[in-house]
Length: 275
Image 1 (tube, rainbow, N blue to C red):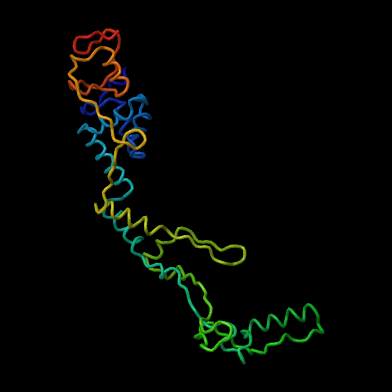
Image 2 (cartoon, rainbow, N blue to C red):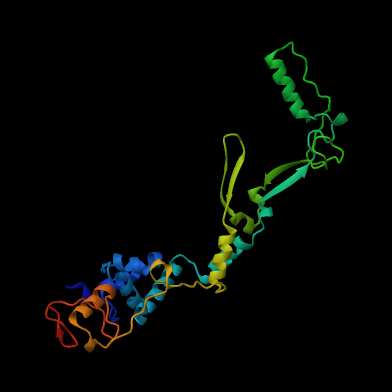
């Protein structure tokens, strides 16, 4: 049975048209959907335009979109809520930069200061390398604490202190901050590598969903110049060669409102025989 004659549910659509709807839902690219559905690549763009102009095609696309959304348990409100959480999340809830005292801020006479654990490890390493080695000096004393305020008179940092980046405990993150995480892993040296989602992209997508941003397309001619428009002519004033050229280049007749189709031998346009 011919593909073009098979209909379903009384809507008048054939299998190729239904295939177009199915393919269109994959990537919303009408031209590519028409090609994948079996239409000629030469006329796919116009075929897509014509198909998407049909009310029955539009209704079927909407119906299928609703069915897919229901299967995924997704609706517009959920999409908007998810985008909103990502777009408006505060990155400081996920990562924070802390400024604290440097090693010299509060050391004795502003000398290098160890924590007790650091000095214990330094002493162990020195003795392991040479049992007779002298203990490492700690002229700045012990008790270094990063969380103390930088000393304004510190000759090393000039009161600016030093910075550390902290990644918050993911078990305690807010819902929005958690959604900012694209991936997180610990590297071989023990540091944390964190990638977060694109908040600007989420905000732009949210604006499009809510109708704040409207995409506009501008058509131009070759080389970016103006479009070269040709005046319409009645079909009866055109030669067979001109009609063939219109069909070859555009895939349709503009004046006369004839439907797009490929002519075969014996068919006529306005009484003219296509040879």
